[in-house]
Structures are given as structure tokens and as C-alpha cells.
Image (cartoon, one colour):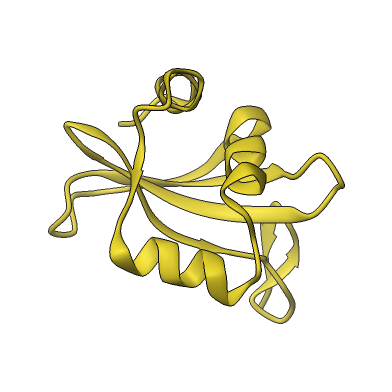
Length: 101
């Protein structure tokens, strides 16, 4: 199980990293590195996932300083790893904290 404080500490220490996929998805949604860091810094864990080949992971929901909601899937591979990043939208999500139908 990943704790949100572990992720927030990695952001403060700048010791987290992006997977190739995570960085590409961040760019696809035109999100900056700073915006993802902002969302991780104020985020909360919505879901925890078992080891799916990259170690345990979790879904973090947070907001940029300008209020953009961001979902970040973080894994634990020794260091915090940003596996993917996206802006949650319907129909998959009814709001940043709840899945849609």
C-alpha cells in the first residue's frame, strides 16, 4: 500500500520520476511538469492497485494551482514513479473523485 505522504515527500525532494508512457500522456493533455507536481502535492489517493508488473500503484487525484483536476497513477519501484497522467472526464469519471458508469 502506498501512502500519500510518501508521494508528497518525493515531490518536495524532487526524487520522483516519470515512465516514458507517463510523460507522453502528460504532454498529450498539455500538462506541465509543475502542474503535475502541484496536483501530487495537494492530492489524495482514490484507489490502490496490487502489483501489476510495475509493483504496487495507486490513483491520485489532485488539482493544479489554476484548478485543473488531474489523475496521476503512481507506482513504487524504489522511488515514486509516475506511470500515467490524465485529466478525468465523463463518461469515465462524473467528477474528479467518482467513476462514471
